[in-house]
Each structure stands twice: as structure tokens, then as C-alpha cells.
Length: 550
Ligand code: GLN
Image 1 (cartoon, rainbow, N blue to C red):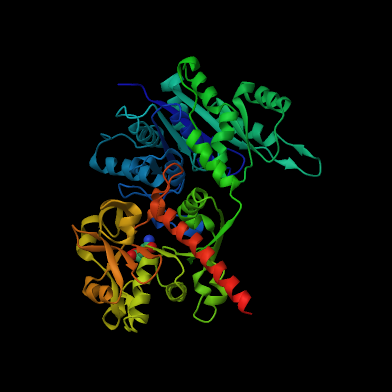
Image 2 (image 1 turned 60 degrees about the vertical axis):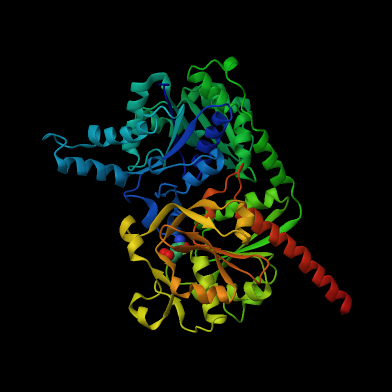
């Protein structure tokens, strides 16, 4: 079995420096050299997983194929590496403690006093090494959440120290810091970097490579200075300069020779490892950067104040617009503020509309207003999860004439007073806890629009929801033109609906956004974007006609 190498990415000075993007970029570069790589995130908070975190606080909750509610950085890893992550790729302090406490209760520690060192650190190390234990990967790249110096991250840094000691050359530490630019002095400052490297040293960890986030180029002299102060070779001090798109970062890090330095330090003979093949990646980035004409897409949702809450949807739209040679003009529209009176004013400029996922009642009525508008004006519209659910309810209310149509999610107590278009499916949930999570099979109806889009009959997509379409209404829906074109046959669940009468009006109970990657953009988003672009040309045509008439 081959030896797995472990790389750690830590961060200093401030949070939000983009450790996830640096970790994913390094993963991409090593993968593009032919290595098998996986990225892991260790989160120092006490929640067992991010499933219960408010999207306003922590951004989107990402879902892996095996049904783990995960940190949004796993989305970056998948989008960059085009390979699935799993439960083991994201560990929180909560889970580490839960495992240790469960072991203690079982008596596994044989009467020993259970302590942070060695029991918590052993559990952390076990979770890191687990990914490498099957010989599946050449590299496991583990990102440590938080900032060096935080109380929360101490046990993680201590585990890194121990692993560096145990694994020697098979372990490497990349530390990401920030070099601020003082506008008044017109100077870049390295002092915070020196301090953060020192903080790491105080915990017994010497960084092997420093990546300096910066808004201006860092000179060779400054790199030498950082190298001298921080016990790092000058060639291992590199910059990560601000870029308009995160997808430039791997290419910039390649220029900085991040992959080469990593491989050299880990004992590889560079002459025997081919250079990273980034051809497809570059093609995508060039398309993205060169696109001039805009396509105007609106995302209607209730967490729009924090765009990270819709991270994967936004990235999927970026992929789809670039592959369609258009520049994405994105508008995030707060559904709480939408109603039948103002909807035209707020949405009329859009070429396509996404109705976003979400939980609970707030903002739901605004989604109905957006959907009614999109349906009646035949604007390309994709409803995702709650978005699909609201599509069915809007249709039931305004087309089938079921004025009380609703989801039982809205108010379980009034369950008997509403026409429950969306209902909790206890039989399925009992099998898997409180939500349907992870990848489920779906069969597409031949002749449908989605069949045409996916070009195959059997697909598998990721879910994260509790409510399901109520099959009692299926026949009425189909008679009136809302077709159920994707089904989970095992549990008889409606996964996709599409409107026969419209050019592009599709609702999916699953989350296609989780599986759109740079080299493999999601077909639903590609097709939705095409429809939006076509709508743009047809509506500008309409405008011209109108202008002539006037
Ligand atoms: N609120 C819905 C449900 O639980 C949808 C959730 C979502 O959009 N992710 O079924």
C-alpha cells in the first residue's frame, strides 16, 4: 500500500483569508500532476455538524453524497477537484468530543483519566489518518478552521505538531497569513505575519511554506525578510494576490510554484513528476474572464443578505454562464419584500429566475409572487428544493384553484385546514432521521424536458429536506399541465416537476448546485442559462418591435 502524505493548511492574522481556496488550489495542482488527492476540513466549533447553523452565521450548509451536512468549504473542494467528498472530509470539535465521550461511556479508556492530550488529540489524529488509511489517496490536505491563537484551535494545532513529529517528511504545514497595505505609508507590512508564525512556533509547529494574502505584489526583498524572520526558505514564501475570480487562484499558485515546493519538500523527484495539466481549467477561466455580454439572473430567497448562504447556487451559475460565454449579472432578491404588486417592478429586468431553497414560513409568500410572475410571463425559472415546493403550491393555488394550498411545514397545527400539497413523509424520514439527506436515485420520464437535459434515464442527486410532494394531487397536476417528470421509484416520490406550457419552468426537489464543478458544470444550470439567454434575445426582439410601434 502506498504511503499517504498529509498536508495541513493553517491560517493566521485574520479569518476569511481563503484557506479553503488555497487548500483546494493545492489539491487541484497536485491532482493535475496525476496524484490522488482529497481535501478535509476540521472545524473548531462545538456543533456536531453545521446542519443546525443559521445560514446567516455560517453560510450555506453543503451536503455530501453520503448525506453529511457539511461546511461550505467542501463545496470548494468538490468544485475544484471534481471528486466527491464524504462524511469523513469534515470533522467538528463537537464530533471529536462526542466520539471521545461515547468511548469513555463504553469503558474503552479502561479507567484512565480522559484528557485533551492524549485522548482528544488522538481522536483528531485518528480522523485525519482515516482518510489515508485505505491507500486511496496520495495526499490528504487538511484545512484547520479558525485562526492560529484561537483557544478553540489549540487541540488541532497540537495534533498537527504530533503528526509532524510522527510522520516526518510525510507531513507538511502550509500557513496562510495576511500582509496589509498601509495606504498612508504606501507600504506593505509583514509584522502580523511574523507574529502569526511565532504564535504557531509557540505551539511547537514550524510552518514549511508561507502563503501571504496581499492586495499588492510582494517583492523578492520582502519575501527574503519574511523568510529570515520565520525560518522558511525564500522559495517557500509565496504570495496569493487578490483576484477577481477564485478560479484564478490555482493558476496563480502554480506560478508561485506551490505544488513544486510542496513536492520537493516531501521528497519527490520533480524530474519524475509531470507538470500540472491545467488546460481544461485555463479554458474555463478564460471563458469566464473574457465574457462581455451579460445575462441577468435573479435568485429569490430569504437569506440574501449573506451571499455565502447561496454559495453553491452562485458558483453553479458562474460555471453555467461562463460555459455559455456570458458574464453573470446576479441579483439576490429578498423574498420577504416581494408581493403581487411590486413583483413586476423588481423582476422585469431578469432573463432567468431561481427560486432558492429555504426552511420555514418567512419569505414564502414572496416566492409565490415571483413564481406566478415567472410562470405567467414564461420567464425561465428553476425552483430548487423549497423552490420546487413553492412552485407546486403556487400552481395549486392559482391554476388548480385550491386557494388554501400550502405545505404542512408552514404550520403543523393547521395541517387539517390546509390543502397539503407538500407533506411530511414520516415513513421515509423514520429510516434516515429527521431529513432526507444525501444522494437518492431519480428516474426521468422519456420525452420530458429534463430527460432531454440530462440525456439519460437514471440520475442521482443530493437532497436536504423533510417535506415531499403529496401524491394525492399528482393526477390533477398532470391534467393541468404540471408534469411529474422525475420520480424516486423506491419510495414513490416526486423529485422533478415541469410545466408543459412554458419554455423552461422546472422544479427539482434535490440540490443540483452541490454537484456542479469547474470541469463538469451541471446540465440543469447549463440548460437553464441557455434558456435565459434565449429569453434575453427574444425579449430584446420584443422590445425592438415595441419601439418601432411607438
Ligand atoms: N423546507 C423544505 C423541507 O424541509 C425545503 C428545505 C430546503 O429547501 N432545503 O422540505
